[in-house]
Image (cartoon, rainbow, N blue to C red; front, side, top):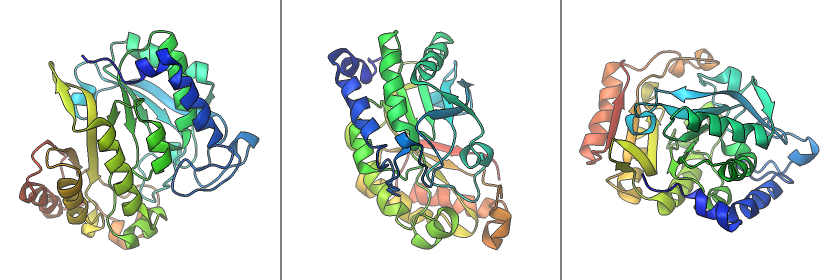
Length: 305
């Protein structure tokens, strides 16, 4: 398998310099498009609720990701607490909204990465990393010094700062963003992020510029590239056609896409009539038909309705 991107940056000292630059973004936090501008290093908190130190809810070998990510040995997931989106239907709201987890130092996070590598995991998969990007880069430099060599997966919600993603150029091997909504109304109603589609499109274009299409090596394991997830929502609330057209026409028709059907009305979704049910088989099939119509042949159809 090809060498992970961050190793040369670590050896040159550039990874440490990137970590320092990322940490400066916490002084007036601009890690995501909300631009809360709070001084997280002084204990202030913005929309996401995260502070100066990272918090982790769990780290483990995960077999439930897409096949090239989990492989036979699992993806080394590190689930981070809090989130910059706060979706009302979040299935992990005790972690992402309530912050259930443990505060960890960069040294402890590095130990987690090395432990997962020692267990044979194919990659280190940071789940909901956006608001902890500086802490992750600092920990990664420590882990690389101690022998970390496997690829980094950036498993995010798609609502990303372009400056933050640019700083990750050469650090992240595999980007795995969501593309949740294409219309302003649902983005406001469900995540209070009216600019979600514009921001996610900007970020995904930059991700693709950095890593290209997903590369799958011998044994079926991904080593580098972009994989986009799209969750079908009831009543077409995700605006799937527009999102998929963007992927096919402005990213690449060879983009790997995971079309997910496992929506259920978690957290506060029952308070929104349109969101208070699972999607139907016909709704899911409609999204799959759009994928086929656009010639997006790479990826996976997930879950049962």
